[in-house]
Structures are given as structure tokens and as C-alpha cells.
Length: 93
Image (cartoon, rainbow, N blue to C red; front, side, top):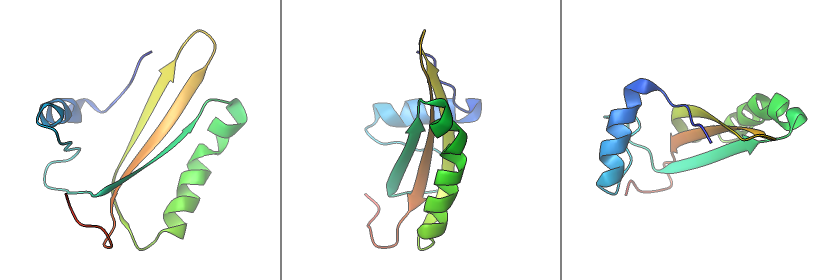
């Protein structure tokens, strides 16, 4: 499986993971994560609309980052959109 991520975040993410935390963008805290993924063509085609609908339905949260990853094997292609956000109803851990 291959994963793609933004090159500028790879070092910060790797360093943070070894310390037991994850920093996607230094200085921009988040306290929740939502992952949207799809493997079937029709589902992948609608994934962006699904994320847009979720963001609109959850206007009380502040989206801090979105990361798109792709993984593939011989038969399937999976797209995932990971939404990092701050929910004022949750504490920052």
C-alpha cells in the first residue's frame, strides 16, 4: 500500500508520533478527527460532497486541516479524507 501526504508535514508528524501526540500543523491545535473513506468508484466520486455536507452540518466546529490519502492494491483504490478540527465542546488533550 502507498500513502501520500504533504511533504512539509511529514517530519513534524513523524516527530510527534514518536512522542505520543500528533501535530499536523504546528501552532494549530485540534481535539477531534473525522475520517471519510471510500473504495468503490461511485462512493469515491461522491466523497467530496459527503465531506462538504458534514462540514456544513457541523458549523459549530472549526476545521483546522484536511489531509487526503490514497492507498491501492492490485484490486482496490481507497481514498480517505481526514478532517482535523476543534470542537468547542471538547477539551484539548
